[in-house]
Amino acid sequence: MNWLGIFALILCSILLLVFIVLIRLRLLDRSYEKSLRSRNESEFLGIEKQTSKSLKPIMNQLRKLEFFNVIINKNTIRIEVEEHHKFSIFRRIRIKKNFLGSIDINATLSKSFPDRLIIFARGYPMYHDLSKFTIGGLEKLYDFYSNDPSFWEVILNNTVSQTCLMNLGLNMKQLYITEDMIETSLVKKTDFENFAKLIISLEVKILTSHKVFEETVIEDLVCYSCGNPFDPLEEVCEECGAPRPRCIICYQKLDTLEKDIVELACCNIYAHKEHLIQWLNTRPKCPNCQKNIQKWFNEFIRFEDLKQLSI
Figure 1 (cartoon, helix red, strand yellow):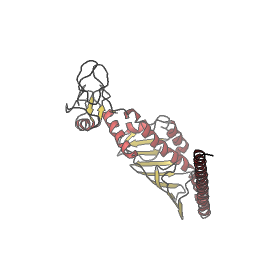
Figure 2 (figure 1 turned 90 degrees about the vertical axis):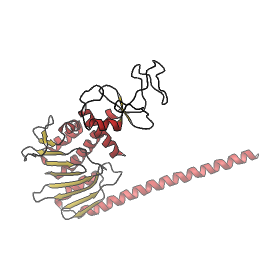
Figure 3 (figure 1 turned 60 degrees about the vertical axis):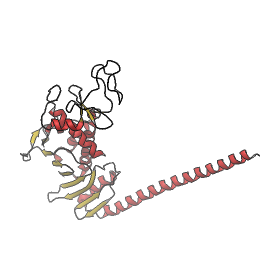
Figure 4 (figure 1 turned 90 degrees about the horizontal axis):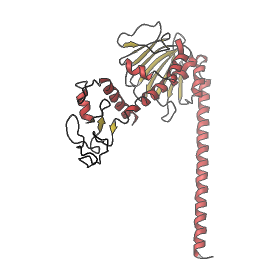
């Protein structure tokens, strides 16, 4: 056997050894995860045995939803939510049985909702500080209030959220959402899962409803006259000879590598994002076509805020 054959044999042996070690490490990792999960479940079951009968339905739902980091103190349950949990929109949750036998839930969130929302079961007192609005199909169950009804009308217009609200029915007396704080009261202790799914559906709808703005901040300029894309250093369109577009507000050069550039939806004109925001903060009309774009601008700013929250 020549030296090349010996070298190949040694190399194959090393690779085989590395492969065996990796398999062993993977099996150990899975075994650890399984033992950790079993330990969490065991600890949870130990806590559950100490729970009063009135809170047992809640504990059953928490176990089903894999909330294991739980502390019990008399009639109060406190939950710390892990970062990678499927309900990680919640950071901390406190569930307390009140003197009427229903449960009060207070939660802090890992992200903030952009506008206030209050939902009252029909027949509860009106909330005069905010504007009232309705959601089709839920008029007989709830009254809705917000400082921005048009925003929440869009967000609540989804099957999952409406199904959760229908399932909760009159068992949810009120729901307050203010930035990263949520408060609610539930008559039935078995409705915690529907409440948690409702909050998740609102978060998902907020994030997905703004995809229309993902292409608003553009990376490439195109010619106003013929639609031909400009190279970063090109000053004149090579197809029609038209000059490179400039910011409609400051009339300075547009460079996608230096500043964010926005394409307005009303007339497809370009502007520096920071200049557009300054412009529309003082007047509601497009600097080019004079169309009122205040609503579009509000939604764009909300989208930009949500992008910052997701970073």
